[in-house]
Image (cartoon, rainbow, N blue to C red):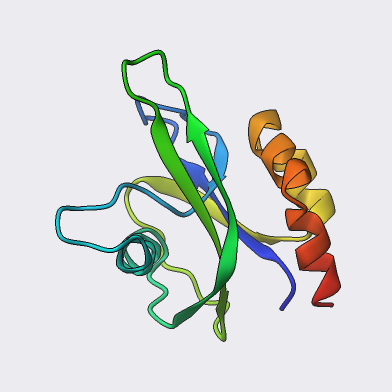
Length: 125
């Protein structure tokens, strides 16, 4: 399936209520970035069978703090389309490029464009 799984944050969320995003989160102590991806995807979507295909891009996020956050974006594959959302999210969609451009925040779209993420998605069709 050539699509991205997008999840929508709950309306009651303190950060980004109602916005669409990709599954993800922070690395916990002792985890590798790859282990964190597997855990975050499992916690947020219930999907356990993912394969990390490649690193899509790495960037720094400056959130007006002393230290920027390092964002590592992986492209992953799964054989399932069954999603069980966590309490943090209220909806999901398996999105093609058009849907991603409609739903995702402009900053994520800009990162996808700058790092050829849509080309990678479309290349696998």
